[in-house]
Length: 352
Image (cartoon, rainbow, N blue to C red; front, side, top):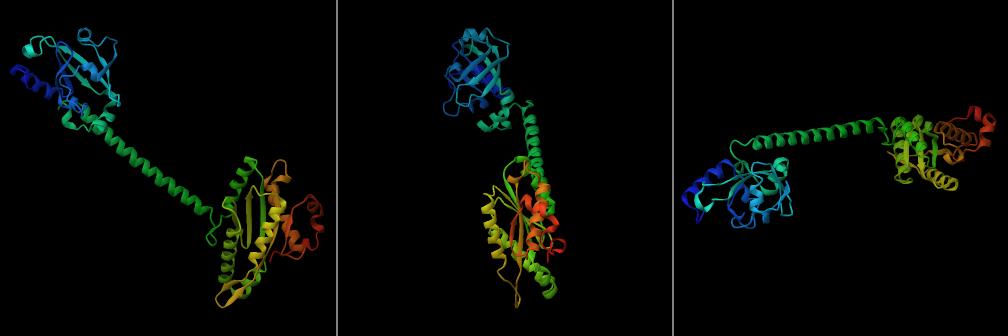
């Protein structure tokens, strides 16, 4: 306040309290005094002595920016933007000074400013506090409401995330076989429906364990569980991340292979699975032995792909393997479907 007469100093104190976002302009449009909140908008250089239009851009109404043109807008709502990179928008109203403030400010004006809708960003960008607003300014209460709403929305978002997570976990449990950790039969229908809708090539491998009943009967159900878990692990290590392994129930499994690579690759994989499954499973003092039979169907053979028909045909191919003596692989073909019950031993083929 150096060089300002006592009446100007008194007026400045009043303005600082009533409207902390004001500036006092002299007759040339230079800032002679700035309220404490406005000073925070100019953290690098004190605004006193700087022309107002070097700090602010008048956007509406259109005017030259000279002091005389500003005085022609007295009482109107003025729209400004800071010339700093933040481009913070401000609203203002101008009041002329006649005798107020004495000679130092005579012919000038007081410009009172506010942030309007940009207040939330301004509080963050300029580290404003409640002390930067007049005690009667409802902006502070609005900020409290905004903050409370933000906290409530954030808590609601977190709650929704927890609910989504719990729902996904429940769905995952509902579609997972507890013993093996593979998908269960509930997961099959939506998976096949999605693959059929997408139209890409996929293969179904229906795998049934040979001699599994003998393991259960001879060594008990704990031994049977150990075999099922070992088989599941061997299926996982022989398939890709995008393949889906399903335990249909008992000792039956289904492998769903997108982008299967063709009949030769499917057959090679099936033989590799059988070889791995035939490796003995250690259980206590015994080594348990099972093998596997596999029937497969390829979506390439259907136009369009029909998941229900493919399941039936993979099952038919599996029965053909069982009828031929187990421990083998068959890809379904139309000829196999026509043979039907004439397959050797098909009428009484066992899946044991």
